[in-house]
Length: 142
Image (cartoon, rainbow, N blue to C red; front, side, top):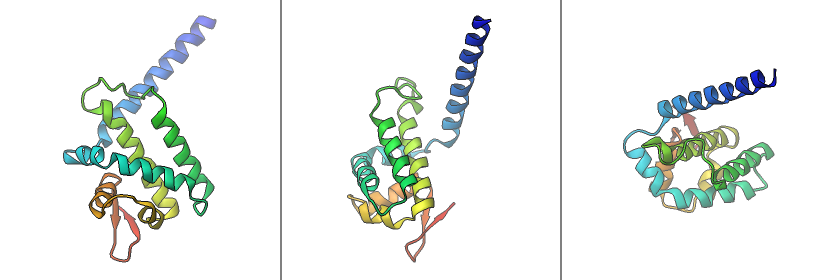
């Protein structure tokens, strides 16, 4: 009986991992977006820390950012880094998804206010996160 439960759990974990792998392959940044993500990484890490420490943001947003930073610091990845193309892209994809969620909840203003890099870097971050900026400075989704 315990053997059946163990096999069932192992199969469920493997199926979940495979579904996540397929999902990451589908939404991975195309072409130069992955290169841009690597270029803005230092500024992005500073942005995440600043946003997580901002008391004016809703607590749910700060919790998400804290969990994201914890995920980025643990040495175990969802997709091992030795897998070509998506091995390193999984972190970028997860960061983009969390940032898009943060902008949906808190708006683009806090991201702009805390962005430590250049305007080109912020534009690359918006492209990576699939966030369109309008002339009024608000965010709209694709």
